[in-house]
Image 1 (cartoon, helix red, strand yellow):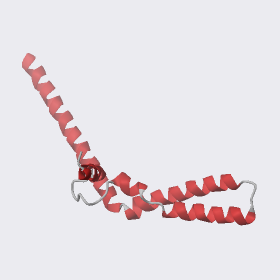
Image 2 (cartoon, one colour):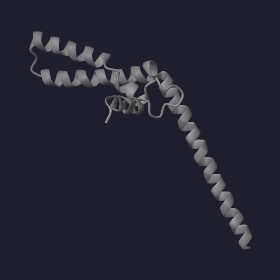
Image 3 (cartoon, helix red, strand yellow):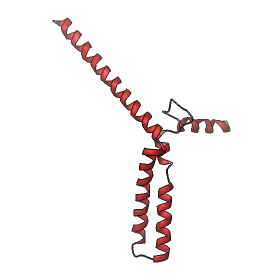
Image 4 (cartoon, one colour):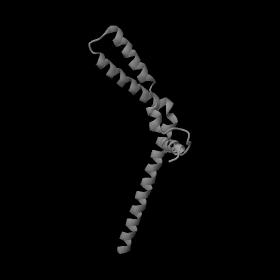
Length: 118
């Protein structure tokens, strides 16, 4: 296996499903790359826990991590990954109408077959 072939396959996986701009990351990759609020919350809770020595320090860390993760997902969905979200909605709508058209064709075909048997 060539040394560059692994890098090429990783690049293909990262941009899989993104036909409009191959350099742009996929929606999931973009959303999961948001970590600013989680880092800030965990740092803040850690500093607070080291200075104040609360009894529920672990619970504060878990709550801070969960809150930070939620903020990161909301920020990613609405700001950082807005173009990928828009592409997601466009593709979902296209897929819906394509499935709807296929159902109509099948119903028309079934109706024609039924009419032919009469």
